[in-house]
Length: 257
Image (cartoon, rainbow, N blue to C red):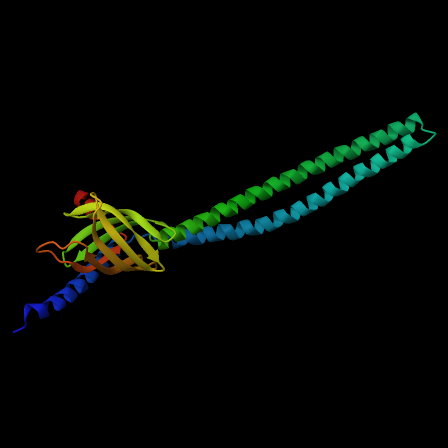
């Protein structure tokens, strides 16, 4: 007859296997039916188009800049001719009026070309802002799809409890809040090093209740690991396994008709 001490590891492994299978089915059911891939592809297409338009805008700006430079050189030449005439001994009124008219026209042309170049610069700025915005959307979508920050639905073995983690990430520091159904709630603190997560669950009195360690799977948006109670309680397990995924938490399931 097998002793109870030999049965405990087998029961624990069976609990973990059942937990992983149950969580996998729950997570698959919670996955949205509409894929985000088309939206991401659309954003990539828009960025590609905007970059091609930016190249055309740069060509237009260079042409405008060259015209503005030529117009300013025309003003400079008109000024030189006027200065030479004013420095001579035989300056006629007709010559002065002609040179002043030429300078006025040169200045007007330079002003027009300067305004055109300014418009081209504003157009470049707007184009680059749009590209930056679209790339930010793509980057934000990638973070939302692969980052650890956000809402995690947790299942715990061998106690068969459900929970909810709301996590935030700053560098490698993890913080947030937790709720374990029918037991406790409080704050979360820990670290994420590579894909290795370790957090402590701290109750409202500031006492560390347990430590959860796991591996973060960014591709499948899943965390799998083990937990260890900090303080032992009579009749309760001191350690076990846990799994977390994106989905509907216990509070939402209770509210659903």
